[in-house]
Length: 71
Image (cartoon, rainbow, N blue to C red; front, side, top):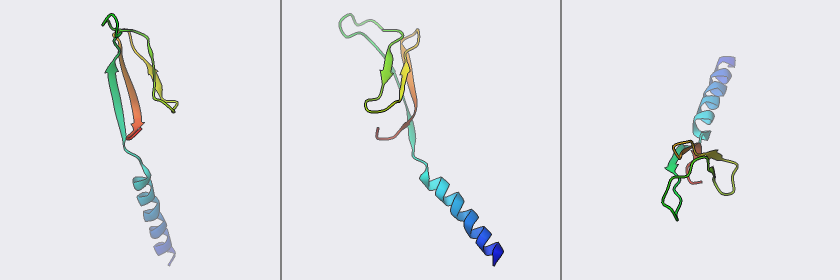
């Protein structure tokens, strides 16, 4: 009986952790000035209503990692 309880608890723990993970995505891009059509380095990028953000690099590229799908 103890072995059954342990096996049941372990399988419940494994399945709950697998199904509770949310799919994530990476958002990548390039920031360009609309007026001059030139790239903009070191610009801050944030997703609205979140604390997820990053800064463009010296080549004007950015990447937001681990963004929950649908955000």
